[in-house]
Length: 347
Ligand SMILES: NC(=O)c1ccc[n+]([C@@H]2O[C@H](COP(=O)([O-])OP(=O)(O)OC[C@H]3O[C@@H](n4cnc5c(N)ncnc54)[C@H](O)[C@@H]3O)[C@@H](O)[C@H]2O)c1
Ligand SMILES: CC(C)(O)[C@@H](O)C(=O)O
Ligand SMILES: [Mg+2]
Ligand SMILES: [Mg+2]
Image 1 (tube, rainbow, N blue to C red):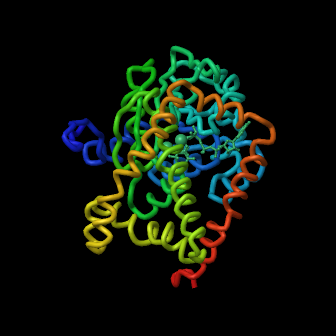
Image 2 (cartoon, rainbow, N blue to C red):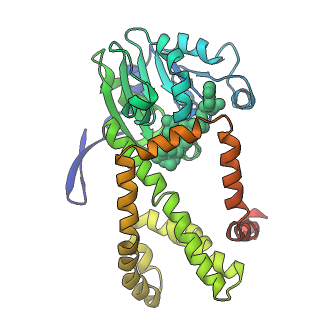
Image 3 (tube, helix red, strand yellow):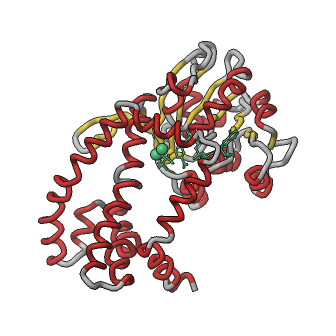
């Protein structure tokens, strides 16, 4: 593992230089990697592994998603199967159903986990919250996770562009003595840029916090608050949207991604820099209690409970769609649709 200094703290990470694709292929050459589920991570991971030269099959129930798998080049009866058949054939079972659906399918998955197979997750959820999920793997299989730090859609897009999304990995159970090698090889195989080690509990608590916080929940909350204030003070929707979202995604975040926050600041006016430097701390102080509340709720298992309860209901998809529709049809995001349509590259 390469030792890297992260802001003064030394951590060990796995890079593609020390763990090249050829090594990953060699380690997994006799494995049948069965990707169960073809939602968001399923396509990203399976297609990347297929293109990287691994022996991959997909297990997906019949329906729209199965048809998508066929369109993506998976061949029924050869590389695409009903879930049970894929579970039977696979030696590494990638459990990539939604976290709530994993509960329902667990007894079936378990019945196919014969000695020496590996059970692979992309989240620490199922095993960490075993009291609620009932997911307790048999002792004679390897259990590990590789959790790409981003959407499966980006995992695939970045792979195609020759880039790599970072992933964490963790070993929960090493029954064969090879769990670690298998896990890292899978991490390289799915197209990770580099891999950092964690454990199942830390992966799930940080992940649930991040997506509810700055990555998804908090960002929408802050956008909505600023947009509303601008609108209440007589600014037009296009002005409010541009000043709240479009400039951030199109101009400023790419600069942050490239070289950090101070670099983005340095590429803005001294007027903007003065204001941003004065205001970031009040925003930090105002939101920190909410982040603390969030983390405590995650730690107490409340967020997992909510997710399991809500996403196990038969009409959860329709309910989610209603809430997404509410966002989509809010004035701010309708203004966003219009703003995006005016990007010159869209014409
Ligand atoms: N979405 C992401 O980009 C992302 C990122 C990192 C980690 N993860 C983790 O990866 C795993 C998979 O997440 P996802 O977002 O790809 O899943 P998803 O919600 O897209 O669902 C995946 C599949 O589950 C199938 N499914 C749902 N209910 C089922 C049932 N009852 N029986 C059989 N199949 C059923 C669907 O057909 C779909 O193919 C989860 O553990 C998630 O936390 C997801
Ligand atoms: C893509 C995310 C938010 O990082 C992932 O954690 C998820 O649950 O989809
Ligand atoms: Mg998540
Ligand atoms: Mg995540």
